[in-house]
Image (cartoon, rainbow, N blue to C red; front, side):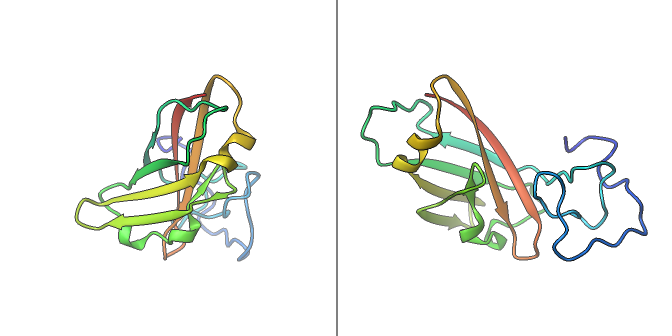
Amino acid sequence: MPDSLCVDTGDPNYIADPDETDLDGNPRMIGGRIDMGAYEAPPSAEVRITPRTINLSGKGNSITCYIRLDENYDVADIVPNSILLQGKIEAESVQVDEVKQIVTAQFGYEQLQEILNVGEVELTIILRLTDGTLFRGIDIISV
């Protein structure tokens, strides 16, 4: 939760090891100061995934993910190969529109079919900026 009172309120003297992670595997320190507790909260990205409904028996080619960052960040700083769906599926293609400040990432339909269940599904996008800042965004689709 980005608005949690625990975000950036951990011990200001704490120095994280370079490869130290939280219980979810995220870097232990995001945003310059450690969070209080066992998890580090990455900043949020606005994510919109299309199509909104996926037919598991269909023969779609890909889904498209539109990503926007907070106005304090620039999409040009996103490391394209760091964009992951569900923490493991790499984008097949990434386009960055610096004027509109939006990134379009496409993910292969076949890889999705292997991990999706029928019903409403929460899909998570994780990405990293060139300075190491991680972002996470969530959208819900129907399967």
